[in-house]
Length: 576
Image (cartoon, one colour):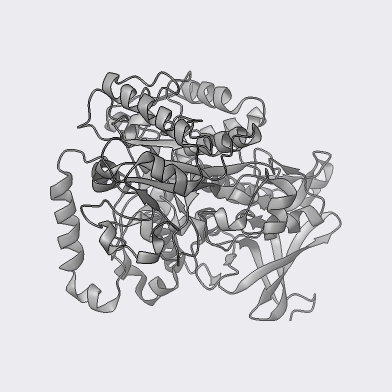
């Protein structure tokens, strides 16, 4: 321990090894400061590692190259419409102005590249300033061999993001496969052969050497850290922040059972996620009912950074909000599975206990989850809700807990899943009886859906009318690729719970990612990014990558701000 009572000293200490945390540490080091990342679990990557790895970046440099157009004014108009007055405009503007430069900076400084997904629409493309593609980006694929033994310490993908639970597929490939787009069969064969013919790697691990999505993001960031000798300490959890004279100067951590003090000469950046796995905090802040077991995030985020910030006077905001999604339970999985894709496919319907629809099944996943709570509050029994489909749907499309029946038929599923994990009956009345749904209501709802499938028009909730609805659908189905008849027995139902991929509430920050007190003043030396901070998106979800895009951008902003402050003489700071 040093004479001042510190066990270790760095210019910048970053808490959390997800995309935001590693980006912050790298950017700080590139600005000439010593930095370290601490991570409380025994794996690096956080929630980012199991995510789609997308970042939502308006005005990115790939847009013109791939045939699109965008402008700062359009992006600002769009965000102001979908966010409303929930977030100070200065933060929104800081995000939009810095996001494209962050992508360029990672590429030229660290060799970390992102490419846009031209066909992935904003989640509200019909709103002013919305786009039908181009703004979402995904990480370039990364060869896991470059990480050597360090690859074994990276948090693994969720099996649901992998083809057949093993094989990596990027966002464009996943769209082609799930929507059965042109060439999907050949693409499947190509990915299978590439995986199984990689003999040397297969002898080493079941994990794909081709790292994409969130795996590609965190692998590239970790590789850059290794190249630049930026340290990472696992099994090192945040206990509390240390203040001197109103400024955060360090933190107390627990490392393998030992209590240590780390000094941060220039700043602490909290990037350690939200609180979705903390049942007490869920009950304190989120809509009821709520259960940690409903989350689709790995069980690692307990609000450590948020609670530490609150203890030094930080203001909390958006604590009742989440990055919501309906989730389904798969026995043996550490977390539930998010239904991103399945709801938009033709031949399914979401119903409450009365057998009635309550939402456009293809709606953006936060809107779907919000609709569950709103309908349940009306006494309609929507927690859980039920996704009902027929044998045709079961054969052709995935359903979260299982692959399409043509690949994984019922006979290959565990026998004890039937009528516990998924439900099946030869008639709709029989299915309704099994799941506790009003039979007459279900019959009437399915009859309406069959008529909508015939006409191509959903007169109730307008499923299939927007580009984002149709992004995950079946283009071979006409006249509406999101609407198909529900007629062929047996009939199936899967219960859906109001889960999330992360919480949105956290420490309120300014346009420079600095944490604010209740009175709006700055807590010097303390920054927060990602789900530890109150989301710049407020109550909305602008498009794919709206979680990680801001996380990386404000990590970049925070590191540069700390560096800029380090260059300002103390006398000037005192006068300010």
